[in-house]
Image (cartoon, rainbow, N blue to C red; front, top):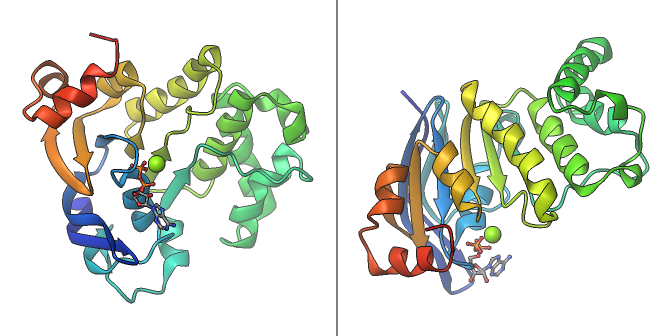
Length: 244
Ligand code: ADP
Ligand code: MG
């Protein structure tokens, strides 16, 4: 079974038709990278999957749960789907540990000791266990972003969504965040990733989706997409990057 299945999804902001008949199937452990020019609907698509936006038409199936126009039970879905944004959205008045304990304890009602084990495991994995008692203002952007990733992982999601998570970071720091995501991919995390890091996209993706004006216009293996894009729009988009 596909862990995620999007069928004929449409989304409008007032009269603006921002997602037009999106269809997408994602298998467990698959990594799909979504590329496309600014404003083409990438963030909106991820936000629909995570219930941050209502959908107008179509359906989204996540691990057997089907979401349509009037779906309400988002708490359940958000425990299956973790999302990381460009802005870290950590609570400044809480320590790293308390930021990370918050959702698992308050929303999932799990016991502190059990969650704390997991928090420490993930912090170790991203190289930040020594920062467990620090506050966000004492961390660099890359460290905050790694904490934000850990926060999502601690809800034990089945799918992770990443929306341009390195876009606000200094170039020398980008790598440390991308490496965390690459490691998750190696371990079989199912992920949808929006990024403008083309080398990373090619390395991490099982499939590339190219969107333009609210539509998916290419869906291909990374090597095929980067070496032989099928549409003029994709060629034009790729020419903006100086990696080839
Ligand atoms: P991308 O992430 O690919 O840059 P977005 O999904 O953010 O694109 O936006 C798609 C389109 O929807 C853009 O034209 C954008 O201006 C518009 N849009 C995004 N969010 C809103 C909103 N909350 N209200 C109205 N229009 C929006
Ligand atoms: Mg966006």
